[in-house]
Structure formats: structure tokens, C-alpha cells
Length: 639
Image (cartoon, rainbow, N blue to C red; front, top):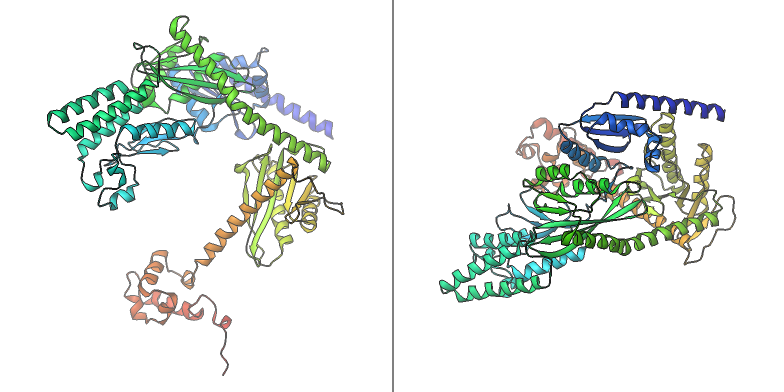
């Protein structure tokens, strides 16, 4: 039977391979993007090409890298999107990679957690704030900053040089007199009318130029304003501007001078490490080195440096139009600089030169960037590797202690939460290679209405694995079709017994254990005494972390259900009574009891309530005793 299944799979694989070859032969000849897909439509790889037909045909040759060979073994389909030029193909490839995050592409690690500085130019009185993502809201965004310290340092410098408001919009609108920031010279107090909008926006424009790295322009602007103030005998205002100039000079003297005649530019350096790599970006403005940013790129193994550079430039600069400099220096790696220049010009609206210098001081700058990329590896990798090594050891220890046949790379944790059986909920949380996989978290609203934790746990487990089996039977792929290497339930023998029963009845051979809170004891099916691990055991820490996360997730959902139920009233059961009318009734009468005591005529005075609806309201409230409970549930008085 097994041999028959293997033969069938080989036939299916050969058939898919033949279909791919046929599609490759039929591919368009012009430029465009090709998308390899796996079973279930999963996007495996997105590529660009000057000639789609020639490029895709090369994937069926013999000289493939290990990564490409692995990708082709999983590929079952390929799609083509033609474009008008190579540049358009490069832009489309970048957008599709960002959208689908294909496993086998070079990807700039998701920077949604990196902070930006936002200058709200569209606001009446703009401020400078920290933002986690950019929006098309008329504001200018600067970043991303890969180090939180760099954001704080930049804000500190801005506050030292430029006086602008830092209060929240709600505070600004209600502020009637200047606050402490005005008295210490850090804000011109536009809230109190002590500053014209024209003068304030002049300062904000200088903030923008400073963040763009145009420090010389900012200094010249401050000097002009200082002289104008002095000529108009506003010596106090001129003195403040003089102090701003001194602060700016002090900051700029601390920046490393590169070369006065050098154009504004970024210098890129790359260093590979394992399956990934690190890109250093040296930011040079007005001949001075302003700083360094570092980024992690995934999927760079076996990829030529030219492809890595092209992928980074397309993904990094495509969302940073305002920050694209005049010149970008890259290592001499044979990259298609013409296509990159076209892309950057489309993004920024100005001419950008991409150069791979072979000699001179610019070559030295690229070498400096390459050295910085190596430093990034030494700074960032040890922490990642240490965490990875700790998780690996914890999984190995857990496998040994529980006598598991495989390493528990995927562990699912379950817990239930209820109040006397009411509003019961259950949670499913996942650790993948020792790290939380929050995209796989699930929560269950339990149908039982009695305080039976065992039955609730059984319902959650049965629903989860029955659905997984059903989806597998239908040939679907998804989160539920991926089964864990270990199931952990919050509890002792009872919960473990229930979980084992579910696995047995569903025909699943998945190990189950329970972790009891009191003494952190691990219960194993068929074992009388619990397993007690040392308190400093990495394996114990791993399962405790999962159990606590399952408990937190279950309790949060239970509270949500309970809160939703608590907000219900007897008005919710009145047929034809919408949400707005319910709000109007409660606002007018103050309580459900007051509504029940009102006459039909009083209720009809509210907009949208006629005689028929008023009668329904009073009839429903009367049946429920005006408190949401049926009359027979109300306590009876003794005569």
C-alpha cells in the first residue's frame, strides 16, 4: 500500500514537472515578472527578467543552486506578468515580494516595528512625533531607524536647536496660557497666540531640512533670520537664534567630515551570514557622515551579491521617496545599475546615480560600509543565535525527559476559562522552534453552559483536530492542517486523560502532557507520578511559557465575552428596536426600569418610535420584569 502511494506521488510530481516545462516553453519573450507557486497556491518565489522565456527555462537546467533546486522540487505552477520595461519589472517584483513574502526570495526583514520620525506638515501647527508606519497623510516621514536610541538622540538634537510644540493635539486645543516649555525656551507657545503661524512654519521647514541632512542650508537660514531680528532691534529674538546656530555648530562638529565636495549619498555594504545577510547603510550629507543604519536580509544564501543589492535597493528605497539621495555607492558586483537608476528616478522624481567605484576615496567609503556590515553581524547575530541555541537545547531536553521520538519543534498549548461554567472560552497557542507563532493562535467559544473543565477541554481539542483532519481529507492546506509534535494542556491527570482520549478516538498519534500550576508538575499518560523538572531547567521554562501564554489568551477572550454579555439589557430583545433607538431611550429615561414605568405616549415622543413599537417595548419589558429577567425568575414576596 505504501509503495502504491509512493508511486502515485511520483506520477503526480512528474506530471506537475511536465506542466511547468510546458509553461516555461510558452512563456512570453519580453520583460516581466514570473511567480512560482506550490501546492495550494502558496507563492514560493517571485523573479524579474529581461526575457521571461529565457529566464524561466534556465530553472530546468542542471546547474542550480541548492536553494533553487529545493524551490523547484516544491513548485507546481508558474505564472507570468509582462511589463513595458525591466524597470517596471523591478518595481513589480519588489511590490509582490513585500505583499506575499515568498520563502525563497531575498527579503528585507519586515521593518514595521522600526520607528520613523513624523513631521505633520498637513497640520495647522505641526509637531514632530514617533510613528511606527508611514501613511499618505501629508506628513513627512524620516527613517526607518533600526536603533531606538537613534530616534531618541535625533529628537533630543531637534529639541536643542528648534523650538516647536511637543504637546498632544487634545492638550494644545484646550491650552489657554503658555506652559513650562515656553518659559525654558523650547516652544514659542502658539497655543497662547504668542507666535504667528508664518514664523512657526519657518521653524518647521528648518526641522525638515535638518532631518534631510541639509545642515548648511539650515545654518544659513538661521543666520539670515538672526540678522533680520537684529536690524529690527529685536535683540532678544536674535540672541535665541544665535544660540540655535551655536547648538547646530556643536552638533555638526561632532559629525565625521568625509569630503566637502561630495554629493549627498548613501553607501551600501553587505556581509553574508548563514542563510541571511546584513546590509549597512552609511548616510552622507553635505560631505559629513551623519550615521549608520543596519538591516537584516533573509534568503540571501547562494544568491550573487548583484541580486542582493538589487533586491535591497528596490525594497528599501521604494517607500522612502523623500530620502533618496543624489548618489548611491555599492560594491562592484556586476549589478544592473542602469535599471536601479531608472527605478530610483521614478521613485524620487530626480536623477540618481548608482556607482560601483573601483578606486579613490569613494572605493574607500564602500570598504568602510563593508566593514560596518561585518560589525553588524558581530553586534546582532550573537543575540539571535543565543536565543536560537537556548530554544534548541530546551527542545532537546524536553524531548529527552518526555521520551519523544522527534524534537518538539511545534508545541500547541491549550487552556479553558469560565466563571461558574458561564461564558466559557478555550485557547490554542503555539510555540514554533521555541518562539510564539501568534499567527497560529486560535480561540474557541465553548458551547457548554455548565462548570465542567474536562468537557470544555475535550470540546476545544476535538474541534481543533477534527477540523484539521477534515481539511486534510479535502486536500486543503492551512494552519489547522499542520499538526503539532506535542500537545500541552493546562492541568493534571484529568485534563491529560481527556486529551489522550480525543487523540485516540481521532486516530492521532500525538504525544500529550499536562502542566499543573501548583508545583509545576508535568503529567504524562500512563505514568502514575508526575515528572518534576529542576526549577532552572530550560525544558521547564519552555512549557511554563507556553502554559502561561495559553492561560493569558483564554482569560482575555473569556473577559471579552463576559463584558459583552454584561452590556446587554432587556431592550436587546425587543423586536424591531435598533441600536440608535435603544441609545435614545436610555439617554432620555435614564434606565430600563424608567422606560418600563413610562406611558406609551411618553415613549412615542422619541424620534422614530411609533405606537406599534412603543407597545412592543412595554410588552417586552413587562414580560421580563423590566430588569432583563422573566417574571417567574423574580423573587416573590410573602403575604
